[in-house]
Length: 152
Image (cartoon, rainbow, N blue to C red):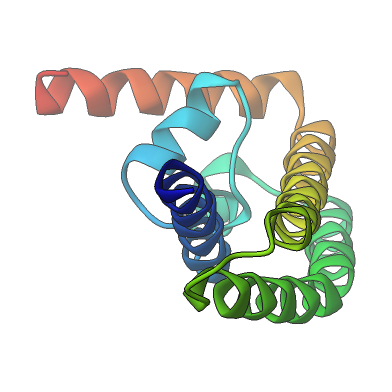
């Protein structure tokens, strides 16, 4: 039974980390590098460099619409996920854990995390689809230059 508690605690900690990442889903550092490695570009990067990239009004409108759609999709999901994680934590805090109930709650929390990640991927794809080939090349070159400057 102690091993099950450790496993469930691990699941909970992973889910909690996911929520933390979701509140700042475009944080700088590793997560952004992973997004770039997939050939996708977060909206904050596009916004920050919109003049240099020559983002048109139509592109800006498309990207803004995609961001609003994403925010709409995940707002309620984040509330629900927080609730599921609190239920899971309550289950795990018992001295004698109802394994079936706890695993069900963990499954729900992880499913919601998966929904969030899919919505995020949808956003990133929509943003890339708004960019021209020339703009994508400009971003790639800027990323390469930045890595060279940092010695990565």
